[in-house]
Image (cartoon, rainbow, N blue to C red):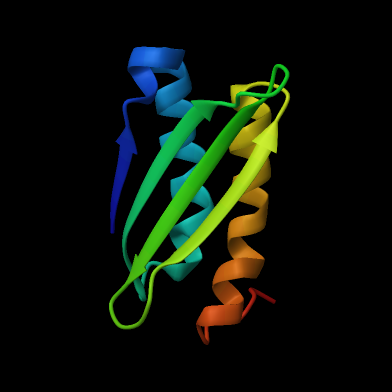
Length: 99
């Protein structure tokens, strides 16, 4: 499984980039048998002081899945999208929850 974190370090710093890689990888680990790649982007939103984190997950077979979340700051947006990844991917795969 490959995780590409697009230009996060340039805008938000290397620590934020590393955190995004870690959180997204952790959320996708149980799906490693079916996930081929993931692309993560983090952008400041136009309205207010929010940040948008978006993850596009590519599977071995099938259409890609996009999960997006908005947060008060970069880490909040990353945490929210990481939390949403599991349920979104379960709807598109047959990977069961751990017991």
